[in-house]
Image (tube, rainbow, N blue to C red; front, side, top):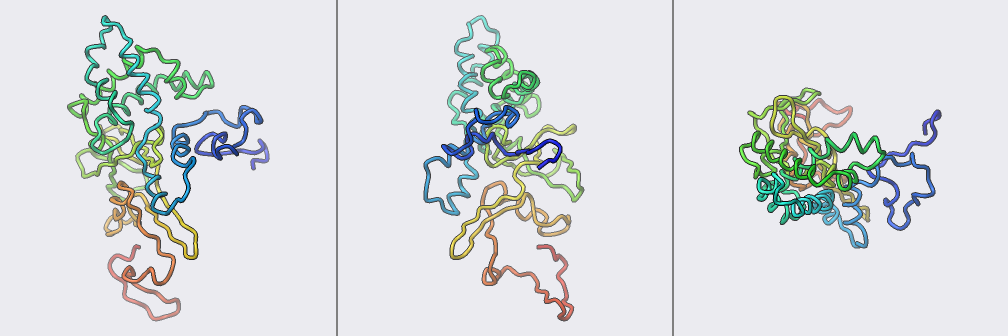
Length: 309
């Protein structure tokens, strides 16, 4: 509650489809309750959750890493249509033949080895950059503007620009997404910095911008060509309540902020694969996983070199 301005609502999507048929009715609320419109991440969640029962900890964990990208499922067919309807005299017709053929048969799902994901993301970012200011001025969803207000030529031109940037930065427009989208943690500084010449690891999922539930907010930096993530999924957990609580979770990177710790990047593989670690709730869960024990008021215990867990 903001005493000066009244109630403020913050969600990852508009409220009008968040609870299915029991969602608030849009016409019952003033326009300022939502200024962005429905986003592809909300559509993705609705797609996965509607009509499904019998969820388990494992199936919920799997759903959280479902690779479908609803934004492109909507936008790519419009790009293909723009290409198909372009006259033979259109200069981009022949130039984009292979790129459009690649996207025409794509299943709109991210993957480390997916070149269509790279092409779609670069295309979407270019079209977004032109569309966002105009959509904001018109008080429209950027996705609606990209779909309905950009011309066929604009859609094709953005694809040509995306292809050129991929070729310039990575040597080919058919660059697998994992070669571009990377996780890197170089040191323990608060402000992250990145280096294409140093070790990094591929991340298969994209930004939530395109509807990915597993979100990796990555982009280029002034001195990089690759994309490095610094937002999106951070702490992720799935919890099952029953006679005993069961849960799995992961933290981006590792549990420790100390560069020399064995836990500095000990969760990277789980983070990028969606293989979340078990959470230990009960004393018996700790068997085989304890590095040291401390009893308040007890004798001082010798600590191992790395005490971070």
